[in-house]
Image (tube, one colour):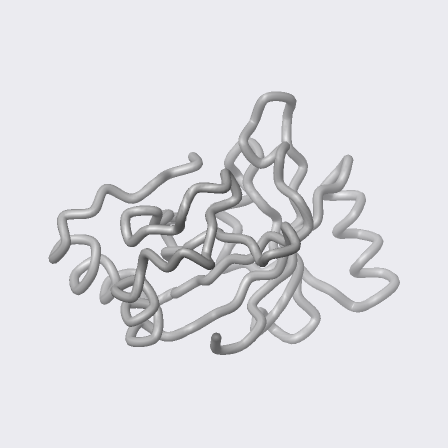
Length: 152
């Protein structure tokens, strides 16, 4: 599964939460992912280790898909592992948050990375991320004719 990438937290005010994490724990905004924070309901990524791992702070408006987001963990893998994972789908024991089986076509495009969202048997939300966007697009999305899910 690679390494832990980030955890998801829903907060009432991303900026206030980011300031608290900065002042109390030394977290800083990750500039590379600022484009996501500019989108309504998108996450503000903060990190205490230069972006190797972090927290995605969500402040979602009513009705936005992220509003239903539950705390979860995202794992980071390289393109080869991500594509191998995708090509091994569907697997009956891997379910999307909706409860439907996770399929290769369940891929999510976040512009900077591709992801699969699923849950463990206990309902905990998990995400598998690959930041080698170009390779996944070419070797998986285009080769298999997939239309990725987009949240924004």
